[in-house]
Image (cartoon, rainbow, N blue to C red; front, side, top):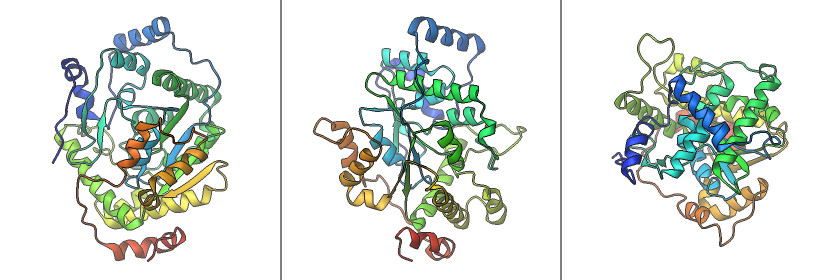
Amino acid sequence: MMQETKFPNWQSRLFLSAIARRQPIRAAALPRPVRGFLHWYEKHILKVDDSKAPPDRPVFLVGMPRSGTTMVQDILCSHPQIAYINNTMNFFPDCFCTIEHYRRMLRLDFESDRYLADSVSVSASSPSDAVAVWEKWFGLDVYDLGFKPLAMADFPQPVVDDIHATIRKVVWSCGAGRSRFFTKLLVVLPYLEIIRDIFPGARFVHIIRDARNTANSLLKLYRTEVEHQDKMDLVRPAGVKGERYFISYPRFPRLKEYVEDFGLDDIRTTANLWNDEITYVDSLRDKLPNFHEVRYEDIVADPAREIGKLLEFCQLSPLDEKCEAIWKKIREVGSLRHTNKYGNFPAIEEICAQNMRKHGYAV
């Protein structure tokens, strides 16, 4: 059952109802005069300074959707040194400093399910998948299931400088002490080499989950996303070129081939995507100078140990008794609000057996 959206005050209900309903799909389209005022306020009233050095050792979380990426994201973003794009920022990617300033000043927030009947609870201040931000940076249409070939040559220095400036604004918006930018990679998962070159010194964390569970959970996610977009009137209007739904499947080069052969709602599509993701990341692990890999199952078995190793790799301060927020998230690891009934294991194993064995999963 879907969690009812909760607002802490009347002003939150007034200003954030649209974000609560539309997240996590697309950004708001603001009238030009409004956008101009917000930019003016940011520059002349807030005096946001984005002229400092490039982002300091940003942390990027890599992995298939439904492999534990949100779990790890929520844990890391509870760390007092981590800065991140929240749901409000993602909804206003062109002027989020002013919007976030007013959100904090007016105590605006909400609590809701991420999707209909989803087990992930989100708020205006919780970490976002930053779909709108990455869509803007990489010139993508996130409704399009096709793979867009890109190279570092497509990112001239002024574009890179603008990306760095945006991240410095994220750090500014998150407040004192939060100097290390973090995000998980969703729509730009197939572009790790470009991200490595845009962000020298970045840390890449790869999380893997058993293909049998991931492929099944991806199908559940697909159905939930379609239902959510239908109910919330988020479907792209008829007549607009391209697919009508935003689907979280990573846009690897063969995705459209799988969709044509099997369909979106087929375990063979999601199993092949899991296999493609593992093969792709394995091919790059020696080309990413700062790379750490962890299995979802190992985090669930001993979260404090694995998160401790992860913090050490990211060069973040270790866990201690003062980190109550992160300890709270660690204690929640493994807790679910739903029951999963998964199947089709033989079909998944036939596609993924080699990579499953390689990463310690019995077949």
